[in-house]
Amino acid sequence: MPEIMPYPDAIERANQLTFALEGTDFDRVEFNFCQSRNPATGKRFIEGDRNCYSNDKASYLTWGPRGATAGHGAEIQQIIVLAEKAHPGLLQTVFGPEADTMRRVVLGDDDSVETILCAAWANARRRSDLRQRFARYGALPEVQEAYRMVYEAANADGGKVQRFFRIYQALKPIIHRDPTEIDVAFFIDRATHGGAPPGDLAPLIAKMQYFVSRTRIVPSAGQMRRQLGAWLPSAHKYNDRLARDAIFLIDDPKVDLSDAHRRIWQKRSGLRASSFGLSDDRFVPAYPVMPVTGYEAIKRFATARPAEKNACPAIARKPRSP
Image (cartoon, rainbow, N blue to C red; front, side, top):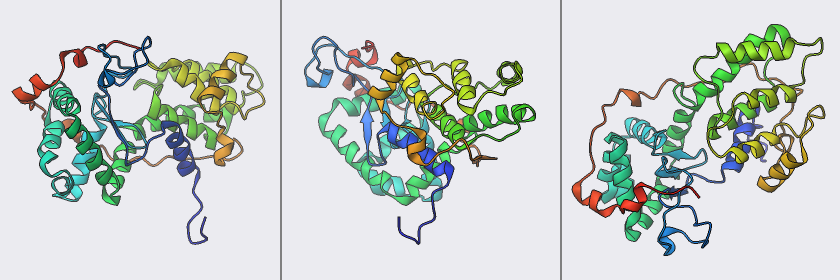
């Protein structure tokens, strides 16, 4: 790196690890309608298969390094709102004739968002055009800053990571330390991909307090992460979550991974937290959390048009799981 650039801190390096796993960037947007391949034919719906398969039917659209979606998480809508609030007219400049589409996505209820984006996906010309416009939009520093603010907000991933920190604050009188750098990378990845703590932390804290104090020897950082992960199973992509968790366990000699777990990890990435300069010998006392985005206060309503309802293939609304 050039000498004028500051050395990336542990949080930045942890974020880069998650970005590597997500495998997308600000110039990448993907429609999540019938996006999975038919296990029998190897083809997708838009490639001529008569069936529709989706492994993430509630996302509708996925964009950027964190995997922001326009579905139930509504991160894309929140990014647009913050970017437009700070830089009015930016959406119109980049999206042009599709700017109204995106405004209706921002203001639409869940059914409307699905319908509007499904209609755009079903039209090859519009699908390609929107991908190009999102690439231009995501290349703007103003939009990247809004993207960061959304994911560090208290009502988004920032709040999920903060819940992990609260657990470790409660454990500090027993373990006598703050979260390690690898702990923080584990928190960030779980906040991004799935398996973050629930809002009510008391039961989980009680179980972790028992786990770390049940013997005279305090468990290692990796052993604590493994147990915490076991009590926070991901609701989807179970094997992928196991493979990602291994990245934060493989460097700890006190953690014995099964052969099956190692194979899943190796097939998924083979990455180690230490490859990103992260260590269990250094500690992170706090995590910066941004204010809530305020998107929940926006009243959403039906914004889809009749033509869009007709343009969305019925099969796309009820996909099969691959």
